[in-house]
Amino acid sequence: MYGKAFAPEYQGALTTLSVNSSLTDVLAAGTEQLRAAERAGKPGEAARSGLAVAEAHRRLGRVEEADRAWKASYRAARRAGDVAAMAWALWSGGTLARQRGAFRLARRLLQLAADLGERGGDIVVRGYSLAGLAETGRIQGDYEAVGRLHEQLLAEARRRGEARHTVWALEGIAQMHRNTGDYDAAYALFEESAEIAARADDRRGHAWALRGLADVVSVRDGDTERALELLSEAETTCRAMRLSSALAYNHKMRGNVLYRAGRYAEARALYEQALAEFREMSEPRGEALSRLGLAKSLARLGRDRAETAAELSELAGTLERIGLRHARKMVARAYDELGIPDAGLVEARPTAEVAR
Image (cartoon, helix red, strand yellow):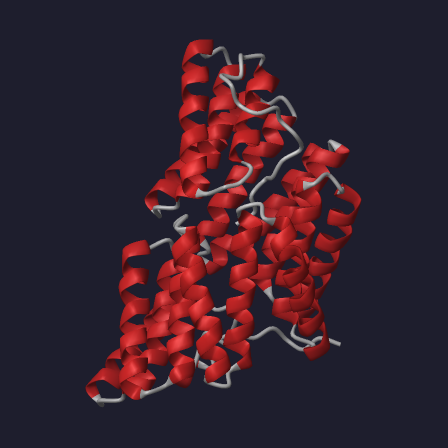
């Protein structure tokens, strides 16, 4: 039903690169082709090669380099009059903006990318851009608005037999089920996405699916060791492909699993590691969520209650500024869980473990 996964963001002379190519290899090849295109005065090829450079930098956590690269790709595409290449550059920029927690900018760039993709006749970049809009809304907790879009994109991906996008959509829908407490549905969807990704040789998608399975196994079944095994398997892929952001989220999830098991000192170490990784790549969402896990772990290990309360209050403001809809509920749950007065925060309800 599904063909082998491919990476449409590797274009022009880089189409031979695999979806599983090491990001350092992608960056080296992309930079070489970009320079060759610039020397030859071929802005169209420079735009396509520059896109791969931008994506490699982004996934390696090199935010400033990624920002410069996608903008240069867009300028080259505009000089070449290549509307589809302009759309791909905007998609990269929108994805980077979401990674940095700039959700308003992400939505604007991704909508422009979708519009240009349609105008340029590139249904793939249009689909990727709509998927980016859906993921942005999901991360912010706007499930009602983006749930139908996820389902629509899943149906389209299944119809085309496009494994990578099918895996993405399944994982997004699974995450929404997990966040609203339907763990059985979440597990089934994560399991399906893992199976499709494995058959299609989509190692990145498989790693994210394993992370989702580990989360559900931990929170639903209390099976700490199985969850840690799944995360270790995913970490092997993240390291091999140099997936810096995915690796940091893997470490944060390992902290979550250990925290749930009452292994607070181990959880603290993982949250500290993830926090350092997110700070290095300037990813505020992951940083704030790691700080929340770290604050809870430290509280369990005897930290002063007033210090914990002050940090939770600060985190509530930070998460809200980032634009996460569930921020107040997440922090309110922490207050309640730790037995600290909630400082006027709303009563907690089952809430999101933001995926990526």
